[in-house]
Image (cartoon, rainbow, N blue to C red):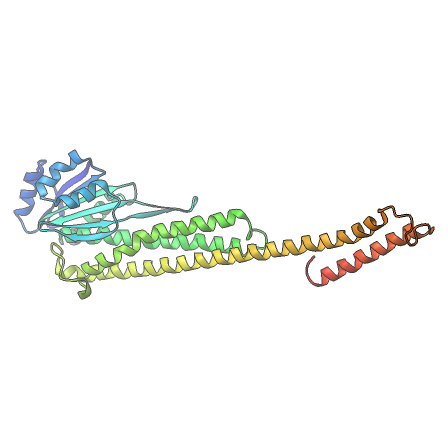
Amino acid sequence: MIIDCAVYRDGRRTEGPEDLSDALAEARASSDTFLWIGLHEPTETEFELVTQEFGLHPLAVEDALKAHQRPKLEVYDDSLFVVLKPVSYDSDSDTVSTGELMIFLGDSFVVTVRHGENMPLASIRRHLEEQPEMLRHGPTGVLYSIADSNVDRYLDVATELQTDLDEVETEVFSPSGGVSRHTASRIYMFKRQVQEFRRATVPLGPPLSRLAGQAAYGAAVPFVQEKSRPFFRDVNDHLIRVNESVEALDRLVSDVLSAHLAQMSVRQNDDMRKISAWAAMAAVPTMIAGIYGMNFEHMPELHWVWSYPAVILVMAALEVVLYRTFKRRGWL
């Protein structure tokens, strides 16, 4: 459904016609005017009117309706199509959730299509309306503000992930909690969340580099002002920082998982040594008692008065020797 629709003239919001065709015509009648329409999870029927009025490419429309797209930038004859993946992080459940935001830029118009509850655009629109100098840049200013806000949120999520990873690392190397099954499950789930975050940030690099005007990514992008390139370079620099943080997080999670598995292996080896040591100590008296329990008629010291306490004393002495030996070697 349409969340908001407004005509902006010289950086100021104005009351435009309710009919989309009239509003677009009014926006195109002046060089300092553009139309911004915001939609949230529109149906095909709801989006059909927008598609017809603005001449949006059917492939881009299909992507906008079905969502589940990677971050990308595509250029069509009459519009520019940009896909962003806003991200939020719930530190209580250690869960990264992503949404999708599609932006159509064309001649004097911006159409934003949002899927999911991440990154509501109402706050960005209000912030822009308080900055007429940014809105005077038209659709380019809207695209820049949305991309900048999205990448800033990436930085916040990366910081929160790093904080929680520090807690996991402390738990792994603590004397009591580092070998629990709960810890292993938490590390694995944390790694999956980092990968989910990575799928949102890494593919955005080439589109932002292209918007920043880097020669390696082809010619200039239509419908985007040339003088906006330094601003997009700044956003791209922030994204590079985010991707470096994501790579560092991924490596650190792998290292923490390896350390945890090593701790588990060491603890299991320690447990096996202890079990083996106690089994050896139990085997000595069992062997002696087994020999004297075979009921042979002719056995040494069988009829000696002090044979019972002597055997008990020998078993006790052997147990002490074994215990001290295993203790000295660290098995007990």
